[in-house]
Every structure is written in structure tokens, then in C-alpha cells.
Length: 394
Ligand code: BEZ
Image 1 (cartoon, rainbow, N blue to C red):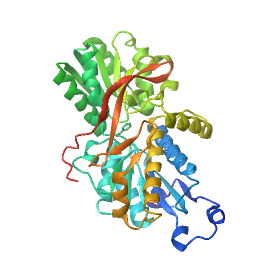
Image 2: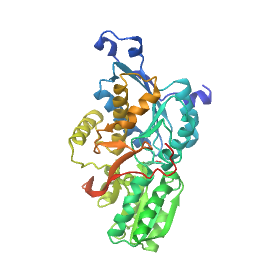
Image 3: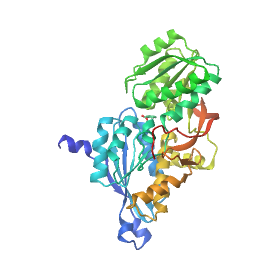
Image 4: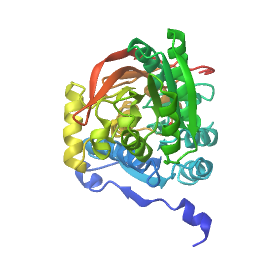
């Protein structure tokens, strides 16, 4: 097999949900045409767990709808991005131009998102971002056919700056992987922390996806800040929180983060994660009927607890179902679909949300603390927070 073919081979063969025709009796030609949902997610590498959770959530939503929408079956096409931005244009173009996907759900990594957005501009597929937070995706590079069911970088880190200052921390070290999302998270924290009166005494950037943190932690120990604010996720978050404890910093210098630090990772982090305080637009403990049912069914279906990444995949599925139901199964008229999507309220496990003009969720951001391995809500840090969508002309 030549290299190019290998790269573009779907991870799993497309699967058309079975039994549909026999269940629904007579179907017109249009009704029998599958709705194509391409997935561009990391199924390998440091973000593999996040990609798997997003896929599980997406599939759970469609399964609850009998794997059909308005009588049409669903075809999933799964592509592994490996969280490598360089792969984005080629895979996007394969899904858009060759496979003619109606929807592309992806990605997790902000660098991949920016590559996808350039390739999908003006095309006939609709991109739904189930995680990547790059501000520009619903900011300066916003597009009519790009929606996000997750967050912007700004939304998840900005509320923590004020919270940290209110907790009495005046001098903070910030740290993240050195790529778009990490840098934007630190900038958003810095924006609200310094305007409250705090000072970021050192910013540390680590090459992505490096997980050797010891030398940076030694430096932090010598600076002795009041607190540390970080962005890491997936396997990197597990390693960072464990190293922070192992190096003796836990208990001496409080650890804060955007919520990815403890999202889907507390089991692997063990006692090292206890007491870590983060901000995020979801928490395991959210007390609403939708969250309870979602978490129960996810646990039954996949044998592990749901997390934010599965919620965002699930909501991408709900968005597709609700929009295509509203157009009575018609996916040919993409402008009509987009119009429906813009008006929808998504009944999410995080709480119902609507989209901003730039197609980003307007949502609560919670202050959370890890207690007995659970991300537990302390309070709402910011209610119905809308990203400023700087530079978006929609
Ligand atoms: C991002 O690259 O946008 C991202 C990756 C993992 C968690 C959160 C954001």
C-alpha cells in the first residue's frame, strides 16, 4: 500500500446503521440515502482518550435516535488525526471532496481545527467542533458552516483569573504546552487576573506533546509563587498532576487550571488530583435530569464514566439530529440546515445552551474542586458566558 492511501484509510470501515429499511417499511430514494458523518478525532497519541470519548458521546446520541434521522440511516466515517495539524488539510479534503460528508465532527486539537477550517471554507459540508478551543475558530476565522459544541480557549480560562485573585493569590506562575490553545488559555487567565490586580511572575511554555516536567517544577519550587495556573490535558494532565505531587509541590503551592487538567483523568491521577481547583463548563456532579440519564447510559454502554469530552460529542450528535429533523431529513440545502442550527437550543448534560452569532455556545462556567476523585461544583464562576468572538464578521 502506498503511503498516501495508508494515511487516508478510514480507521474503521464506514458502518451504515442496520435494519433501518425493514423497520420503517417503505422508504423513498432520498430517505434511504445515508446521512454521512465524518469524524476527525485523535484515536492515537496523547489525546487518544479525548477522541474516543467524543466518538462515544456522538454515537450515544445517534443510538438514542435509533441510528436514523427522519428515516435516513447514518454512515460514520472515522479518521485518526493523531492530533497532528499537518494532517488536517488532506483528511478534511478527503471527507469533503471525495466522501461528500454532510457533517464533519472534529477535532480535539486547536492546531488541527485551524487547518480544517481553511480547507472547509465555502464547501458543502458542515463542521462541528466537539472540543478544540482555538479562539479564531469562532472569532477572526468564523465561517457560516463551522459550529462548536465545546468552548473557546478564552471561555475556559478567563473566569479563573478573577477567582484566583479572590482566593487571595497575588503572584502566580502560568504554564502550558506551547501551542495555540495553551497560549490562548494563559493569555485569558492573565487578562482577568491582572485586571483584578494580580501579577503573573513567570510564564512557562513546554513543547507539545512533551511530558517531562521535572525541570520546570524545580524552577517553580524556587520561585515560590502563591499559586500555579496550568493547561494540560489527556495523558499530559495525568503526568503533570502526578509529578506536581511527587516533587512535593502539592500542599505547598496550590494548583489551579482550566478544567482539562482533571477532566477524565482523576482515576489515573489518584490522590494527587484531590483538591485541584479548575474552571470549566461542565462537572460530573451537575445536578440535572439530563446529566444523570446521560451519565448512567454512558456508563452502561461503555463501561466507564462520562466526562466533558463525551458530553461535547453527544451534543454534536444532538445538534445534527435536531437540525436534520427540523429540515425533515433534507441535508442537500446546507443554508437551510445552518439556519436551523443557529436557532436551536441544545438540551445538554451541562445545562441547555444556545449558540452565539459566531456559532459558539453561550454557557455557564463552573468553579470546581476534585473531591473523592470527582470534579465537584463549588459555584458558578460566570453565568451564560459568551465568548467575545473578536474579529468575527458573521
Ligand atoms: C485544544 O487543543 O483546543 C484542546 C485540547 C485538549 C483539551 C482542550 C483543548
